[in-house]
Length: 478
Image: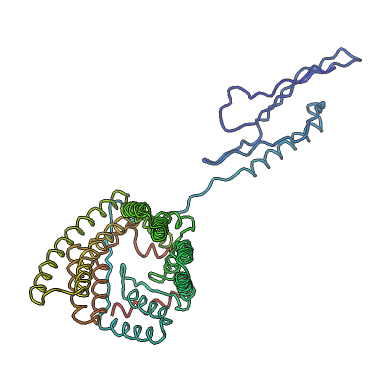
């Protein structure tokens, strides 16, 4: 007769590793004799312990899907018992082999000694006379082809400036073929033509087409950033942009929704002629203007935080409060400039009225347009300088980061001088204005690195056409 089984319990006092214990106790009484078998304890301590790597999870316990039938174990010391022990050991080792391994962290790029930071300059070697020839050819061919040459014109200008921009002694380059821009240009033209055509049919159809165009705008932004970074290189190494569709829609959803709601409220006010529609429109516009700093923060957080320089992933560490403060400074500057321009415009308008008598409507409209252009000429450079300093000074990581020290006052004065010369030359001063502005913005940047550039290049393999990028470097340095 069987006296029963006892529970399986761990042995006390064994606190090292993960050991497997099993206690099997049984008693058997023989009907034909008075011999009583004593209980035997089988301790599998000699089996190899399970060494679990730190951070990994232990192998899951096997799941019994069928009822287990209890049977008499073989006598201890018999050949059947040894076979059972061998099977248990094999199952144990198989469970260890199937346990998940701990992930090995990727090797970091060796950095310079602690506290050592190398400041790498950014230099632009472009000349206005060279760019003027490119600009004239691009303008003429674009006009002659009714805009079809625009992708080629853009690629030529982009390559000219990047091949003359040196970062840490190595030149940038742009490798996109002009034909690769045609699908995006075709999509933009198709959307614009569809919106204009629908508006000519009926305002409602035009607004529906405009809504569809806004719905695909984030996709166009994502495609443009990915394409531009994938075809830009430094020292023969390609840059990259790792963005997701959901992220770009999350960054641009609120500003686009504000524009869409304002457009529908405008149509409703013009159709139903009820003052409440215009009140709602004013409320939406006011909220949209107040939300501009948050919209800008979300966009630059999406753009700067997904740039990759080979093995280095960049991050953007600016807070929404910093963007709000920038927007507040811009609003104060705009109020100051508008007051000065309106005062000067009033003096000029009074002098004209005293000299020529009552002014006509065309004169007044021209005066208002000129004053608005003067305000924009002073406000836009202010925003660009402040935004560049905020965006790039907060971009980087533990091994590399950027610093922008663009003089706000100097950049505003430069753009005011360019605006005056553009008016006096009827727009022919444009290439000189572009080169001077780009040089001032580019050379205000500095790269602070805690890694050696040669070490970074060693961890950043060149692409197939890297040999072609050596020639522009020699031309730029010459």
